[in-house]
Image (cartoon, rainbow, N blue to C red; front, top):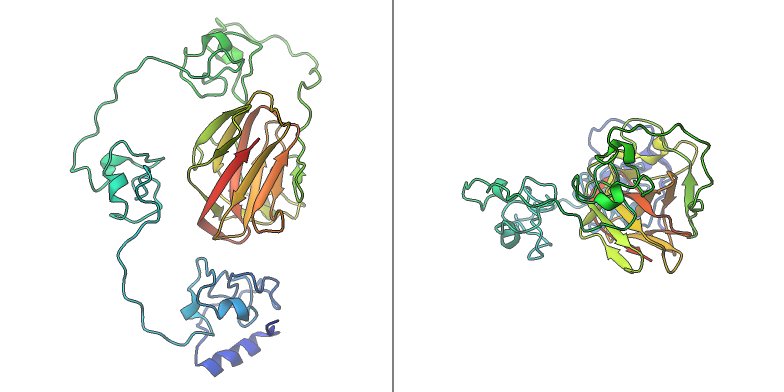
Length: 370
């Protein structure tokens, strides 16, 4: 067990012994002493995650290979022997030759010029970026005009209205059988009477709500927590935002599993401010990271969402089709996060891939299993 410094004076003494100054940053009353996050691979002193006082996370902060997140890094700490600055290295990208453009005009995960094969191909995937013609390989050619295509929908005749007044997966007029039926599933959309088949008819007077055809959503995985509604300060997770960070997908019962092609974990909004009284700790962005639709009756009677990362301690937040919020931090004795639901509700699952500590853009992986 490493020595825990009980005061800033002890940290100053250690700094003097190593000939390293502590800088002139203003004192922060919130820093922990002693530090509750020792020996976890994260440097929590001010040159790292800035959660603990100088000298209180010695094992992690004396290791140049620990995670320093957005801090000044190992060389700015009290354990570093001054070293010459490393020589610059050429720009590199760990995601080359995978069909995704990862430069700033695409998924924005890598620097300019580091994913040439993918980003020089107009047919690569550019995510929500500005696209091929905003990149460095387009030679100033204008984007070609889109070719009109007939309205079509791959999800017709399945009992779900997929036009904009329903699940919003298909254009107007492309799912006529389902969307002309007032009893079809319209998901979280405005419903049948906001569509093009209602002929101006008004919705009938409200009647007492029938008993729900689906049971309440229940998380059966260990370490899962549920909350009935959001709230808190500005920036909190908001499922009403249409555009997600990493897209959406529909899974039909029996398909087995799905992997989100690319996702990162973290954010800058604290969940403790968004779900007061829950004790949920972690940081996310405001819009959903991913939107997942489930359709059909699961043969296994359950569905599992698993978020993993080698870069950060993840937290997983999901808003389920019945409007409940579910949260998990660590699962199965790891720093990864898992939520398993049974029974499985059809509809929209909004997912946030968060990080336990304040950090962003940590490479992660999200799987969905039946």
